[in-house]
Amino acid sequence: MTTATLPAAETVGAAPLASPYRLSFARLLRSEWIKLTTLRSTWWSIGLVALVSVGLSLLMAVSLASFGGDMPAIPVEEANRQVVQVVVFSTVLTQLLAMILGAITVTGEYSTGMIRSTLTAAPGRVGALFAKAIVLAVTMFVSSIVVFAAAAVVSGPIIPTGALDLSHPESSIMPLLGGALYLALIAVMGVGIGFVIRNGPGALAAGIGLVFVAPILVMFFPQVESFQWIHDAAGYLPSNAGQSLFMGSPMTGMILEPVPAVLTLIAWTAVVVAGGVAVLKTRDA
Image (cartoon, rainbow, N blue to C red):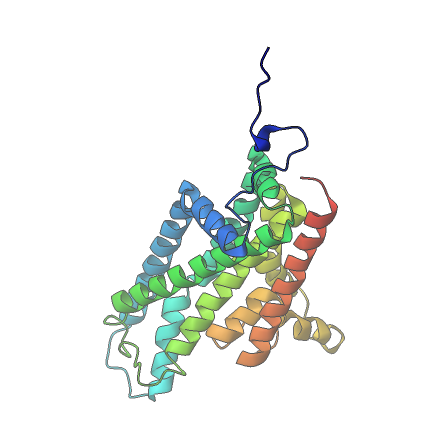
């Protein structure tokens, strides 16, 4: 009679072979990048943003040119301001698409059950949330810059005041960077809201209410002393702070200087993401 000897790794109580793979934040970023870029909804959303942005900028430029006549000479800063307003005019609508894209990248995983695989691969949970937010923010920022550049190239020759004068970056490049930053942060807010609500229609309703409906509601309050605090506070709503940053004037509320506007947007983003972290850490998938 012979006795078979099992390999050491297969004997009872033996330690399992060490895996050559280790979970790292770089791998989480790569995972989220693959998930984001392999979704058709991502490319449809970015394509729709590009189409709407360039189309509305072209329409507004043609409208300005239709007034006819020679435009009086104006300072370069004022001319740049008019061109920037034409280029970023579409953000009134594309901010909603940015919010939607951020929310559906999260709620889509909850609706399909893929979130279980995500959290199994990243049991710490918070790393997966931040990886998703960073990938989406960078994608939205870069795509917005490309779209703004395309809109400026298409509409610039039509606008009576002429194309952007890039020799004055504070009135040409910086507002466009501010617009791209705003859309990136709005998309990250969508991610946070998605993790808080975990339901597609609910997350979209909350996001649209925050960035689009809330500023409009302020218009129903009369400009009298007893309601002035509402109009002052409205300047710190996300969309109003964003418009102060890249358009120079919000839909409603007081105008914020660039630094307070950026800090306001960062604060809103931090609060919403913190809410997503809290829910993600305390509730089951």
